[in-house]
Image (cartoon, rainbow, N blue to C red; front, side):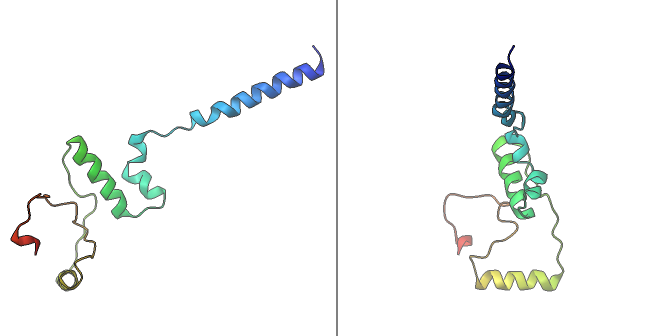
Length: 108
């Protein structure tokens, strides 16, 4: 076997390996929606908790918070006042409530 033919075969094998190697590095959907994986990718705890809760809600599993948020009375009062002034403020418990499709007086 000539040197050129052997080099072409080796080059073909190396190119085949590199063409197939991305398939070995696959990540499943279950892994990408895991809270720890999301936080390791640079997202916040809030985004990780949202993905965790939405995934559990869609699959029918019990929905509970990942992280506890204990605040003292002063901070809770300030957040309540600021939430009344700015209704567009995101709250940590925005996914922890029952969504009702019909409007009510509590929406005001």
